[in-house]
Image (tube, rainbow, N blue to C red):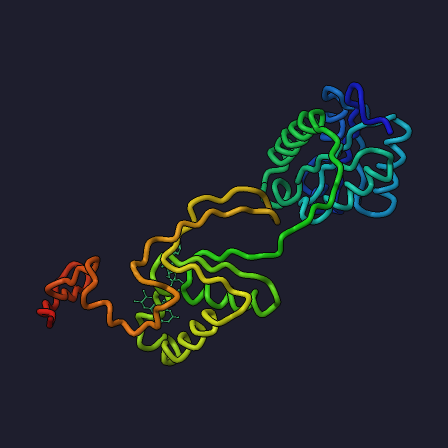
Length: 283
Ligand SMILES: Cc1cc2nc3c(=O)[nH]c(=O)nc-3n(C[C@H](O)[C@H](O)[C@H](O)COP(=O)(O)OP(=O)(O)OC[C@H]3O[C@@H](n4cnc5c(N)ncnc54)[C@H](O)[C@@H]3O)c2cc1C
C-alpha cells in the first residue's frame, strides 16, 4: 500500500458516451487536471465504469505510484461503490477516493459547452484539493439496539408502532398529550372515503395499549437524544398525572373534582377569523 507521504493523485474523467463527452470538452479538462497540484496523472476514457475503464484505474495506480484517486463522472449514488472498490483493488485504502459529478451537475444541466467545460474544471479542481486531505478509514461492525422510539401517537405514530412491534421489535411510543389518537380522534369521518374515524382508530389505539412489545409513554416528551445510529439514548420527561396509574380504570369520575381542570365558560366556533357562533357551556 502506498497511502502515506505526499499526495500523488490520479484523475480519471469519463465521457459517459456522449452524456458528458457531448457537452464537456473532456480532453481539455484532462489536460487542465494534469497540471493541478499533486496530480501525477489525468486520463479520460469513454466509459470509466466499464471493465476496461476500471482496469485503466487499477493499472494507473500501480504504474504511477498513485496514493489518491479522483473520478469525474456520474452521480456518486450510481458508481461511488464501484470506484471505491477499484481503488481498493489497486492497493489503496478505498477512502483515498473522491468522486465528482460532471454529468447530472454539469453536462445534463448546462446548455453552453464552454460553460460546462469551465464548471467541470472547477469541480475537478475542488475534488483534487479535497482528496489530498482524506484520511484512510476502516470499516467496523458495532452492535445495534433494534428498539424503536416513535415520537407522536397520532395515526402515523400508532400505525408505525404496531408495524414495528408486530415485527418483533420493542417500541417506545412517546405522546405529549394524555392520550394517543392525535387529530384523527377529533374527526367524525375521514375524507375521501367517509369512513368512520373512530372505527379505524379505536381498535388500533387499544391494540397499542395492550401490545407486549409497545411501551406507551403518554403525557410525556423527549427531552434529550444522544448517541448515534443504532445506539441512541433518549431521555423522556413524563409529566405528573395526579392519578394512581395502576389503580386507574379510566372511568373519569375524578374529573369533576380535579383541581387542575379549567373549564371554559363558552365555546367559540370560528371560520377563519369570523366568529360564527358562541355557545354557553353547560355546567
Ligand atoms: C380538521 C382536520 C380534518 C382532517 N380531515 C381529514 C380527512 O378527512 N381525511 C384524511 O385523510 N386526513 C384528514 N386530516 C388530516 C389527518 O388528520 C392527518 O393527516 C392525520 O391525522 C395526521 O396524523 P399524524 O399521526 O401524522 O399527526 P397527528 O394526528 O397530528 O398526531 C401527531 C401526534 O403527535 C403528538 N405530538 C406532537 N408533538 C409531540 C412531541 N414533541 N412529543 C410527543 N408527542 C408529540 C401530538 O399530540 C399528536 O398526538 C384532517 C386534519 C384536520 C386538522
